[in-house]
Image (tube, helix red, strand yellow):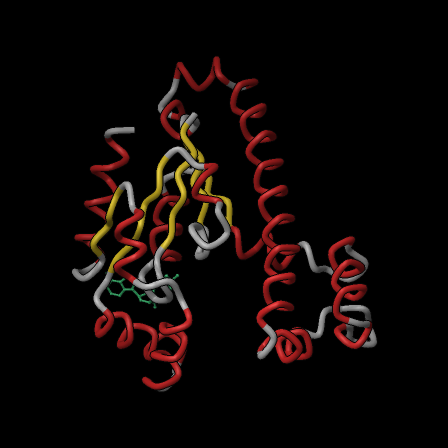
Length: 210
Ligand code: ADP
């Protein structure tokens, strides 16, 4: 079974690619969703975070006060490193657990899979991970797909999607791993400078060869 890690900078088209893959019946694990799930009120991770960064990072209802935590790590590289370490380790664990579960599920239904069109969809699990390379998750996948788009195009698309100003978007882009670095590490590069049809046809071609 192939595990494919999908990544790309903000506004490159990760959600768009994920939605398309899901519509085709493929399974996509969402690393950001896992990151949100592990800090639910009462979770082991919240206990660890509050023992590292103080009870002040919790709201009265026991949920995570992201602003507070953000302000604590913002200008403190050591604290930021600790936070990333705690979060990334747990996210990787959960993703691995889910892959094991899906593998079992797929193997149990292998007989149906062979007999139907479902076969291909069970040969691969995608992981949508904005921080695929930064977290080291790329080392656990069979292949990395990087969605690439020039900055001007993605700035325009994000402005339209989020209503942010150009400066805010540029600031966010500048905090991320550079486009060139991501491209260098890609096994497969998806060019999303064109229209959706062009993007989908690249995906269709790649899916053909799975
Ligand atoms: P990401 O998840 O990487 O941040 P999205 O998939 O949300 O990026 O794409 C950013 C925005 O650009 C979204 O509003 C999306 O609908 C739009 N978009 C993505 N690809 C295209 C494309 N090929 N043509 C036009 N708009 C696109």
